[in-house]
Image (cartoon, rainbow, N blue to C red; front, side, top):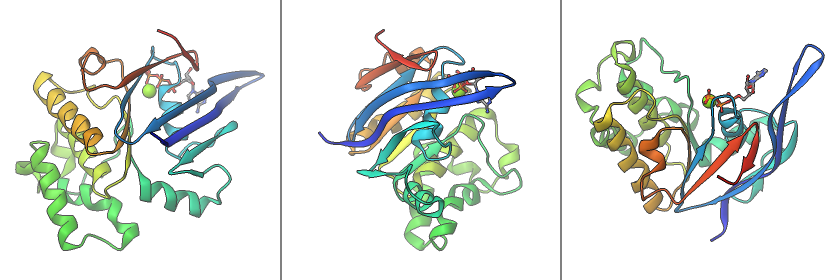
Length: 226
Ligand SMILES: Nc1ncnc2c1ncn2[C@@H]1O[C@H](COP(=O)(O)OP(=O)(O)OP(=O)(O)O)[C@@H](O)[C@H]1O
Ligand SMILES: [Mg+2]
């Protein structure tokens, strides 16, 4: 299995006055298509920072990220953005749905840089919403959604461009058992369907699922053996 998503010696430091804080410290990992990998670790251990660098939205202080065999760190910004959009779907911890737009409009938003939604995009968006039990809310403005519904809308949005890799930050944080299970089923299905899936979480409902291929443990910015 060749890696689709790779971190090579990834490090991110933050300057805090005179002190330098290392949020992610020399992390290397590789995720192949077909894998559902969990990234566990206590609050503040660097999970979101690592995901941000892997997704090309945070610049590493050191190290490299390869997506689909190409190093994104050396790319010019517009090329990096295009490469990320083409290959990676991201669900951030603070979900940024546009409150005044409907659920369906939010889901279709990532297609704008690709020239907008075509008929088959619209069908796929609706199928995703159905899969995530959100189809009845398709026309509702995002501001009317519950926390769990927002989470599921953000997942549908990350999938609408058909990325081969998906990065999710605490995707089940606001979900009850039933919705969490639906989300996990979707992630497992994506992995079976040859996607590379990385999910940052401390949710035992994810960490104990048999479909999870591996659990990586982050502590103070470093990968450690559990
Ligand atoms: N922009 C920033 N400036 C300074 N420090 C930061 C910045 N972003 C993150 N950090 C610090 O980096 C460390 C890792 O943060 P990160 O958000 O990656 O942790 P996390 O594992 O995702 O935590 P949680 O489980 O609470 O989401 C924390 O100590 C945090 O305070
Ligand atoms: Mg986090």
